[in-house]
Structure formats: C-alpha cells, structure tokens
Length: 521
Image (cartoon, rainbow, N blue to C red):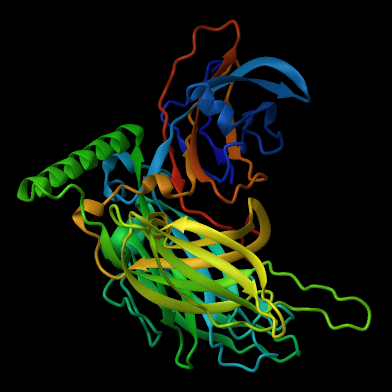
C-alpha cells in the first residue's frame, strides 16, 4: 500500500522532516515509486499531479542511503526534485525493540511475525469430500487484526486431500500500537482447542473444509488452535515449530511461527561484539579448568526427520505400457568426524512410498553427535521390484546449519547438476544448547527489509506526495524490509538540500507469501 505525506501549504520548498514510512519487500531490485501533487481545496477541482519518480532499493542503498530524484511528468523532465533517504535495520532474535521508545511512532515497525503453515494430517472426512484450507488470524480482534488464507487442497492426482500440504508463509509487521492493543485484549477460548490459554491471543489457526470435488457440501470449521505472544517470547530463539491436534476428530496441523525484533546497524554491531566477548571468556574459563582440553565439546541430542519430497516425475514407457510412477525411498546418513578420528556414519533407510510424485515419510531418528563436525546426507532411490533400484540424486547439509534452519528443503543433485527433485528435512535439538554453542544466528535468517520515507520539498504550493514499493519482483531466498524517507523536493536553482531523518529494517526467514485475497506471491 502506498503512503501519503502531509500537505505543506503555500511553499515552493516543502519539507517533511519527521515523516518516515516502513515498507516490507522481498528483493533489493524492487522499486520505490514517488508521486507528487499540488493539493486543491475544492472538491470539484482535482489535485494537480506535479510528477513521478522511481528508484530501486538497491540503487538507493548503493548511493549511501540518500539520493535526489528528478520528477517526470508525461515522460518529460520537470526540473523539480525529490530527496529520499533510507536506512537498514536488521531482524533479530533480540526483542528489545518491541518495547523501545526508539521504535514507537505511527506506522513504525518494531518487529515481525513470520507464520508458516506447513501441512495438516488425518482430515476426518472421506477423501473425495475433503477440500481443506487454513485461515490464519493475527491480532485476534481489534483494529490491527490481519487474516490470511492458504490455498485449498482437494482430492486430485498427486495431492493427498487427507494429509494436505500447504507450505505457505505469511509475514505480519509489528508496530508498537498493534502490540499494545493486542496485549490489552483478554484471551477467551470459548471451547476451542488451545495449548496457550495462559496469555493473550496472538495467532489463531483454523482448519476449514470447503465444497468437495464430488460436489459435497463443505463441513466448515474443523477446529482451531491458538498461539500467544507470551509463548513466542518464552520460546527458544522465539520460534515455535510444532504439530498440534486441531479439533476433536483426530486432525493435526504442522506450523512454525517466528517472532523477531529489530536492530539498527549500531545495535547489531554492539550485540555481536558482546557475544564474541562472552564466547572468548567462556572458552578461556574452560581451558583454565582443564589445560589438556584443546576444544569445546559440541555434542548434542538431535532429532532428524525426513518429512516429504516433491518434483519427482512420472516416466512415460510408450504405447500400451503403463507409466512408471516412482516408488521413492531415502537413505539418511549422519556423517560424524570427531577430533582426529576417521569419520563414521549413522543413519537409516525410510520406507518406500509407492506410486507417488510427492512422497511423505515423516520418519525420525535421534542422534547424539558433535554438531560442529557432522553433516547430513540424503540419497534418494526409485525402488524396482526387478533389478537394481534407480538412483535419483543426493544432497548434503552441515548439521550446525540444519539446526539453525530447523526445517529446510534441499534439491537433490546428480554430480553437480540439479535434478528438480526436492526433499524437506527437519532437524531440532532435544535439549538446550550448551553455552559454548550459543551463536548469534541472525545472519542466517532470510526475511523482510524495511524502507522508511521522509519529506519532499518543492518550488510549488500546497505539496504532498505518495510513496509506495513495487512488489512485482520476488526472490524466494531474500525477503527484506525497507524504510524510505522522502526528504525534500525543490528546483535545481534552490538552496542546498538538507539531509534529514531516516529509518529502516532487515533480513528474516522467508518462503512464499500468498493467500486467498490475492496477496502478492
């Protein structure tokens, strides 16, 4: 949505000193659009457009976060200019910004919810009648409630209507006003399934059945679960990844919610230096207690889960022959190398999923390993009853990286070439990480970047402007928030421009963003 500045009356050099706007974008090549008007007070006399300008976020940040743009009107240069400034802020697992005065103000972002709806299980309906989707409400009741919908999964070849896979992500920017209103609204569970009834409702997942492919009438709501803001604050890294029962007929839903605060460049640098000092003091303390200990123990109990695959293809066998739908199984290996020892290998073989291009295993094994010196390897095969199994490809990921991501999708490779086959893996710790292994992992998080906008300045009267961020560019691996500040607009002959306030935001985890209301994807 575009943002409108105030109108600066009777001036040719308008200034919007403290008017900053935060935007969420998903790629540095997305553009910031500025449109400037001369406001007319009569309702019968429309405002006069003075010109437009645009710049990509990448170009704005490359110019040091401040730049001057000439306005164009009907493709022609006007000789009028707008100055924009922007500043990057970083999404972090530190939540001081949620209560900091520095991040207060109308429309100013202080954090972000990332909501991932992964999958539902055991839909209690006949397969041909099942057509389910998930409604996600954030900010239960109040002026800041946001509602999203996943796509609907029904009975269709290649789709499991009783265990529908959604794999959709929704981003909810947090403002101080939103938090105050949400946290002042008491929780009322009213018979709905919830494991978090000890706080204020923050996020509500509702599983809904629509009309089936056989024309059967939809069954409506099958159940709801609630997640509170307090539960996210208490969670490790403020992240909750769970599979919970929903309703009372045996259905379950798998989801992940991440709560992030924000840090300025200065706050981020200060935090990283503090963490380095803590680590060096801890390592020094351990070595002083035991001079023979040359390294810190990184052994942890972890659970590795092979969730599902996608992208596998049906092989055509020619006329009069049945197409070959793959029967996929995996070999999951955890390869460990501790100290000077030779690497050794642990793991298991999953069951074979017959005739499925989107196999689902949801098989787990627990390991006690050195997470710093180990990696996970996946080898996929198409099982053949007669003859040798067909090799489909492999993927590897360091255990420490998998633990940071918790859930990730890996493309299988054959040699160095991608296959288009993907495996989703989930890796979680079974106990709290040791102090020596605590790290600031904000750099691994991919998510929105914020841009703030400040004042335009003109040699024209009664000027206001609108600023918006284009969303036609999407990069699945880089979601960012940008904050632009339209500082001033003026004729080239006017006095020097003044550099004014700026403000902005950073990186966080991201996947897809789409819903039933045509939100961008």
